[in-house]
Length: 136
Image (tube, rainbow, N blue to C red; front, side, top):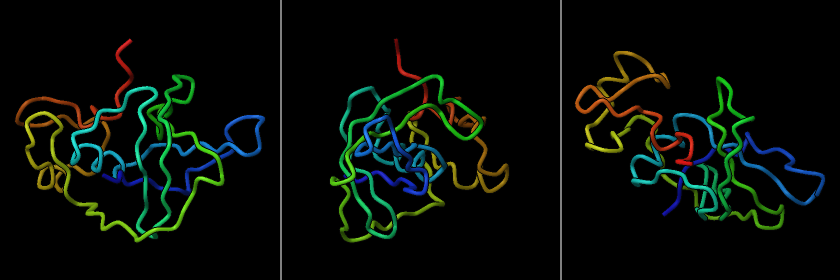
């Protein structure tokens, strides 16, 4: 299983020049997590890929100080040498299922736009559920 991620959101992660943080933001990542039934948890290892074939398997972390209008605070941490080129993933940016009831958000999002404050009209689950803060 590969989760879509936008590698343009990659940045240095610490004072260690070899470590990078891939910020897990955007509707592409959110839709991919929902499609695969994955809710992020600290320490889980996932494989992230983009439509150009850039791929990395990395540990997922959360930092509440990173929460902003564009970020839910989740990121994947890895070493530069762990990045690899593979076959690009075929990512459907338009299909987005509710995490809980599997209702297709596509017509709903077409009407209201890709907003992070949307809830499933069928069961009320927030569209952001897979990227929600960790259960402490």
